[in-house]
Length: 80
Image (cartoon, rainbow, N blue to C red):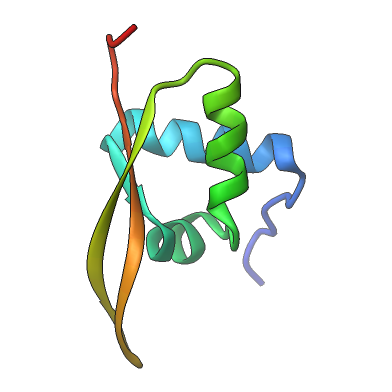
């Protein structure tokens, strides 16, 4: 059995921020499949509210069932 990740908001924010620092960006689909964060937009909003500079770019991404327009969140490091 796989280890269960916590669904608490603070744990989701921590996973998301760590991923952004390591990879610079993440899409909605990636957040769902890699981090098990089904609704990343609220977590991104909360990270922005505490001062993280994160911009949204729209991208087209494929899944096994089709093509979707999704948000890609990009962390701006060193920007005031």
